[in-house]
Image (tube, rainbow, N blue to C red; front, side, top):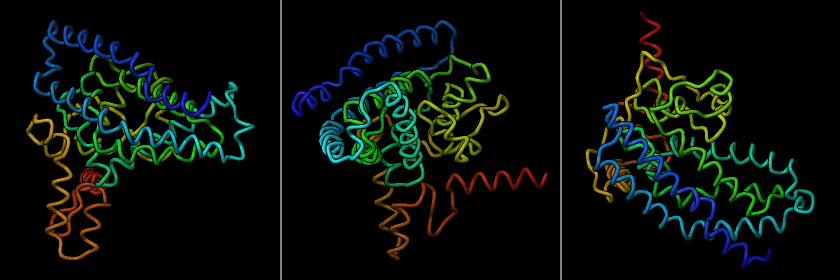
Length: 306
């Protein structure tokens, strides 16, 4: 397959195009179950905002995705491993772990660097946890997303392999955005990202903030200290620590960029301006430090005093 054929294939994104109708059918079924059981899993304006974020993210991602493919293609061409790593079974298995590892750090960075958080926050702005929220993609994150994967073609994996694995991961993550599935058997919960683990990720409870960044495998969170288990006595409260209370698509997509601009304008010192951009959300030069790690430390300290 030559370059032109390959890039045409990627831009069509056949895997995701095939999955989207299935996603929509799953949403309809979840709505029906929710209404039958009076679960109130959906709210019309919230779901509409999610659909707008899906459209916005697809539009914004088009050019970064094309540029990323070109970069992956040429980085693979200069890789000393390109003639060793092909599409053998072991190459696909290796790529599965490496891609998932990459996704973990990309996702974690989106929560721990405020500029990246501004691009990711639309996904977390819903106060509902449902399949519609899975489609409520971060818009601004589409711009910086692919930089995290640039190292994989240098290891000998070709662009189509990488994009295929990224698509598989995205499809998997759709199914973990639900309240209809409880905890799964312990071995599955230990290894894989599950609805239970991802409910924690979407929760605004202090004990759950910035935890469970996994894509497919929860092992990365366990290894790098960002794992938190869903507790039956601490029901997840979805949304942001300060909800935006707006369903206007433009506000949902951009509100955090505006907040960063306002905070940078308030700060007098250059180092404080930079901290508002690159420190984790919640840092303040003249107020309470509300970063997740600080809030969790205070919570733990309060428990220890009891």
